[in-house]
Length: 235
Image 1 (spheres, rainbow, N blue to C red):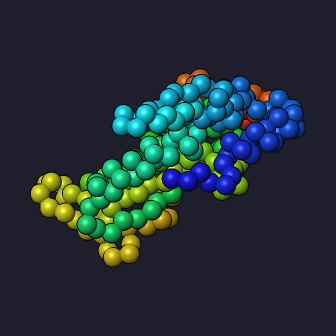
Image 2 (tube, rainbow, N blue to C red):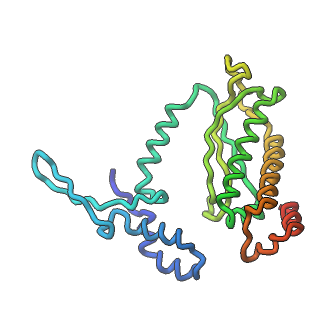
């Protein structure tokens, strides 16, 4: 496969230092390590290994990969393998794409409480899909799906949301037959949204009461229970 004319690493090598200076300390040590890894990936900085043809003796030097999970070069093959495996799992039914997201106010809390809030987002979205799909007034079936967490939007700003790929149906309660949804329609969006919001906010409030949330900087006033409740009500 030919090397593309421009890679992410090329942008970092040319503009990385300037970007870090302009960011003025806003880039965390973890993100700095990612930038360093991507810049060094498959260069002499990480060393190399020699491949030799057993027939003609021709040798080729291959620079080592950074293996960082954010690196598009290192993870390209892993992504392709994952997609192939998921393709093999597909059922011969219609599929739907369902997205669960949170407003900017909640995203600000999530930025300071990633592990806690991202976990709540994943659990609340999954529970919402399963509960509404199991309702006899809706689909009346046990469903399965694939959920993927994204923590940024198309503008590359922080925007936590979950993409769910859901087959258009599921197993009946007795487990012996397939229940299909209506063609082109899976579950009502408003019902999904209302239940998700309730489950998500309930879990966030419970995390706050149990002392699992931390607030720094401009969010420090939210350490007070009344301020936190008011903030959630406006989000």
